[in-house]
Length: 179
Length: 179
Image (cartoon, rainbow over all chains, first blue to last red; front, top):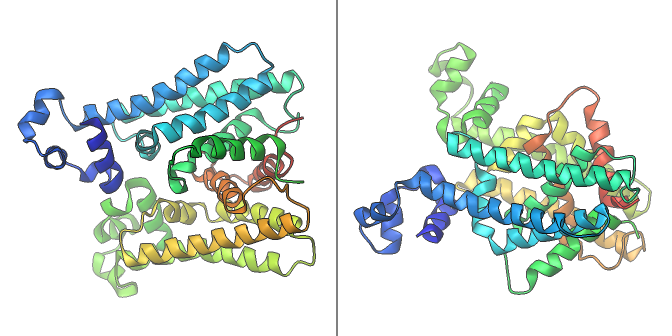
């Protein structure tokens, strides 16, 4: 049911999707849908949590690695691309949210918290001499995540595609395009 | 009038903005608004054109430079950041459009045309040995523009800010974060 709802949210927009539309797309009645969930907002929250939980799990895994901060940062960017690819429709829902309700505001707060995890890693890597000193860590974090998040606009997941797109992102971000 | 409309489109969303809202925000009557323009869609088109014209002017200027393709590419990315900063509200409108109408489709076509200009520059720079050979040009172009476009999500224009954010973008993109 969550997958069906998320597909409709992305196709038509959350505001233009009704509980009736979700029921129709599943071939069940609206009251059957309400038997399982309290309403459209619960589906939105579940969808955004699926995206955010993936990102925070990646952050936890990376935190546990016993390697320099630069490598943890690179791993986190790589894993963010893979979460985005694996949970594509959920991340797309998350990134379109503008904070119009409390549930949306909470998701935006968690996104900002994730931005801070990345900013902190850039700072640590800079202190260790792994990241160039002439870049502002919050700006670097936002540009990195901006590049990753842009994938929802133009990338379409395909088998084996996540690794190669993660390679492209990390090569551009850490080595730069210049030959 | 265009500036007022664009502000409302970004605050409330295009779909949730009426010609009446636009008139109210200007302190004039709805019929006065219609005296100048045919409707909401004309305002949307004018807004998107203002953004796209800026980008294509930058592309034309860069094409005229007698420097290696790598440098033209770097200049085009830098100038795209400056267009985005100078025409912030217009670019924001452009990037939120999903292609629901013919006017929106036309704007998406022009965006794709601009992507191709950037892809072509990456290819040329690669052929000249300026850009690393192990990156796919269309992917590089989209990641570059994804990073630039992400500015509408988190950057707010301020006097003198465009140059420093353009420096951060081009440093990350061309030199990479690694020290």
